[in-house]
Structure formats: structure tokens, C-alpha cells
Length: 416
Image (cartoon, rainbow, N blue to C red; front, side, top):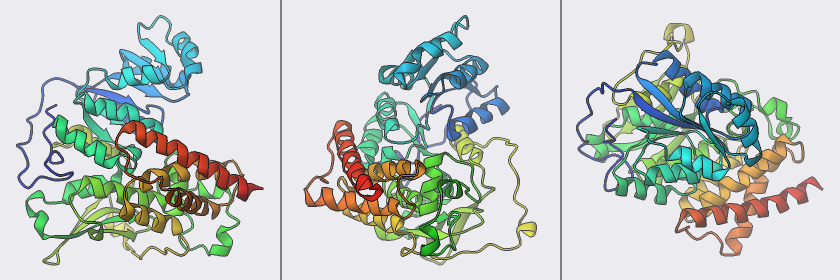
């Protein structure tokens, strides 16, 4: 796959005159899938199952599920499988015994997989753990199909600068960014008024603050539209996820912060919109199925046949929209403020949120405490002068660690 892409330009975003689109290749596109046993990885591999003539999976990475990883490695006959958990290496090697598939464990093995010769690296590892291997793949000149938020939330300036240096494509897999990717007219950037990322509103869109104080993890994990991992599902319930996506969009698209907007759309049919100065509003629509944006990235600039549900607008009949309520969902406001502050604020926001979500899922703090913990961390680190812009991935990870330690203190105070 030729990595020429509209995102590779002098500025992070779309170039005014995109490069010629690559022609269809006769060889199978080689894929490395980081986060193979997660929701993004599973959806990616399902697409490969439907198009085995077009894609070849050469390496897989998972976090802890050695048996599941081994089963996928055997199914797709990969060359290499890596598990992030150093303790899982023996189990993985045992499960792959006799297959001829090489394996490894720990950070070095994950890095080896990320650098495996491939056309596209699917960055589906959740959390800050996905930053280092994805950045390494980028430095090696791989096309990145990006689903890991931390690459842009925590290290957006570094990440997109490296993409420009390497002249490689960064293809957005998140449904909202992919929607904008599909409808943003690169030749008319000067005429763009704003882009709009839509949010379902989560399971508590109409729930009062008082009732949200009593929300349980089981209730918060019941997303009305999407089937996702636990952290992103909780982030969707607090609207933090939408805030993180706005931060990502600020790096992907060459627009000012004032041109980025959020709109609650409970049906999750319209995934993103672009408003132009002449009043035109272009929207990308589709069933809430992650295979659609993933396939768009894997096949770009072409499209694949997929067994996803087709929209029946007559049956839907009604699509509704509303402004987000920042009083009941303060996490979104915190994320927008972190974006405007810049520097290390987005990285600290993300790390604090990840720790707070884990504490909520463990029953240690309440649902409303998630945003409160994040606010505490940002205030503490800002007061200590610790939110300067990280100059390297290592500095990002150091700030991530500092924010997590501060979050643990805030959690302890609230859990006491």
C-alpha cells in the first residue's frame, strides 16, 4: 500500500491539493494488529475473514489473553505473536507449540511486533501502553490505522510531526474522526466553518445529577448503541470520551479550537459533520458498527463489501440532537479546557481519567468522582508547574506516571 495520504502535509491535517490516490495493489496488504483481542482488533480481524484475498496478518499483539492470542495467531497463520504481559510468555509459547509461529513477551516483544515488515499497523491497544509501540511503527515508516487515543491526546504534536517527517499516512479509525475524514473537502479548507463530532450521550443522557451519584459500574457499562471495551464505555458515559476525541481532532485537522464542536445525537447514526461557510452541512451516516470505519482505513481510498446493517431511514423516522450538558457531564468541559491549555494538560487528563475509571469499576469511588479526580489532578499538577509540553515520548510517559500517582492520592481521599 502506498502511504500517500491527505493527512501528510506541512501542517497536521489535510493538504490543500491531495496526492494522487494509489491504484489497487495486486499483493495482499500486510497487517500488524496491536490489540488483537480487544474490540478494535476483533473487528479488524473479522474484516480480514471476509476478505482473505486482500489482507495478510503478519503479527499480532495482545495484553494478557495468551490463549485467545494463540488461537488468533493460528487462525491467521501469522509469523509472530507477542503478549505484553511478561508472565504470559510461557503460556503463549506452549499454546503455539508445533505451529511454527514465533512468539515473545513483554515490551521488547511488543516493539518487535510493531516493527514487523507490514503495510499497515493497526493501533488498537487501549491506553498509554499503546503509545510507545505505535510511535515506533510510525518512526519505521509504517502507515498507521489509528484507534489508540493516547497517541494524539498525550503526544499529538510529537506524533503528527513524526508523520510529516516520515511522510506516512495516519488514518483515523475512530468512527467520529473517520466520518470527518470522509466528508472534509481538502480543497475547501478555507471555507470550513466548523466540524462537529457527535456523541450518543451514553446511558445517562437524561439522568439527574442526584441519580448519577448512585450509578453502579454494571449500569455504566450498558452503552445504548456501541459494543466497546470497559474504559471507553465508561468514558462514553461521562462524555470524557468525546472530550478526548475533540483533542484528537485538533491534531488531525488543520482547524482552530473554536472550529471544533460536539453535538449529542442519541441514535448514533450521524458520526460526524462539516459545516461550510455557505451554510452547507455535510454528514457521514452509518449503522453503529466499528467495522465500517476500520474497513475504510484498511481499504482507503477504495471501499470493501461488508456484512454490516444498512441504514433504513424510513424505519428510523426520527433523528434527534441536543447540546451537551456540561453541568451534568463536567468531564467534557475538563477535556476542552485541557485542549485549550495545551502543553502537558491533555496527557495528565488522560492518565488521571484512566486511573479514576479503573477505581470506579473496582467499586472504590462513585461515578461522579471520576471527573472530580481528574479535576483534582489537573489542579495539583498545574499548581506545581508540571504541565509543560513534553519534548519526547519518554517525557510523555513520565508525565503520565506523575499524573497517575497524583490520581491515586485523589482516589484514596475519596475512597476513605
